[in-house]
Figure 1 (cartoon, each protein chain N blue to C red):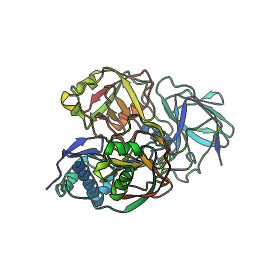
Figure 2 (figure 1 turned 90 degrees about the horizontal axis):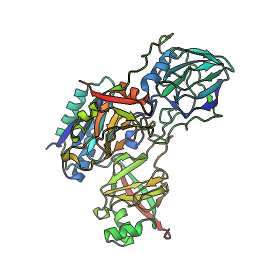
Figure 3 (figure 1 turned 90 degrees about the vertical axis):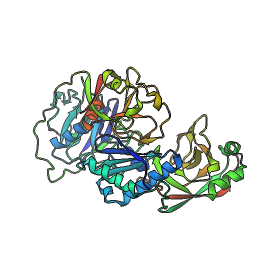
Figure 4 (figure 1 turned 180 degrees about the vertical axis):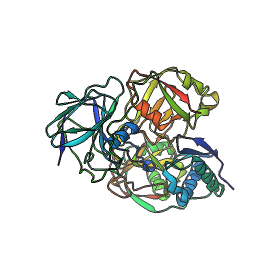
Length: 221
Length: 288
């Protein structure tokens, strides 16, 4: 098997790999598998950056690296991968969440679950970091209970607190700092996702497994 | 330790170097100087390597008084700068004596001026860079009146042979021609030559994140009207939102975006558009 892909131009030294697998979950898993394969390959030493997204992977070469070498190597790596290959988690992080208030009732309505079933669904299945973006330290989490797929809020909030744990589409995520946002918020944690003085600065990176744990149910806010 | 006492900043003055490459995966923009070439030239004029922090001054208006003797250089947009009221040349190193006042006027053409100092500005680095990142909120905040900017120790050795004077390009012909390569979603557009045939006006709604352009709206190919899942962005990417009015991303760009990218400017062309002012005309040409 091989990964179905297209190589798209993306500036001097850049190649955008697009996974053409139509199923979005399989496409995303393929992106993560390919990113993991590149990270393990000597090719990683030729890169300034390796950025996964929903169905694309950006490779940016260091100055002086021939773009052709990049293209050939990434195709060779993809040839050995299967879109169904699971990416083994690199490490597990447990995040304690005080569930309650915010959009918990709305999510229960949207999913047809009770509030406690929503909390159980969010904590019972481990999530995996797919990619970052949006803000330093933010991670898009996938692989949770499929019943939790909900649309974004119709009216984004102007202020979501640091540590808010939310859902949007098939993703879950934690706000690394206070910001505006449209995710359906299930509760709040006091996890520090981003510390620019730490190495690495982000607690969560692609491949990390995340487990949520309910610590107590606060009063409705 | 020598310091600069900031008496005025103009509309926006930030710290810059070559930014924080390699952290896009965790949501950090590359940041750094908007006009990389002008920043680099400043460091070469002072014989130092490309990691010294300089000031990026938007539309002039900066005034600083030096507490000690320091070598400085001005590059990028020409502001008709003075030292204690006497004109000084841009593109050549000069000395500020203790107590002397360096004042930048308003550039007649171009937008961003780089004030480099021998030793660099000694502000704390975040993820290996002293650049102000207005999108991620990393690095030092924009410079304010009353700030005292410390200047770092002067390196013992020169990284480059000393340069007395840099010959820079004369005033640019208008509209500025921007060399671009194809973007990942070039085929999402009905007629890519619409990009190159249009004269685009730089919008006042532009900043270090991106330059917004106004002109005849770019039309999508009917086969590609759907939503694009967010994908990684690079500096110089020409992104086209549903309005059809493109945005060219600069140093503080978001790491991913959900609209198709029709083209990506060369690094040199990205430096050029970083110097374009609101109201300036720009054009694109696909490079061979």
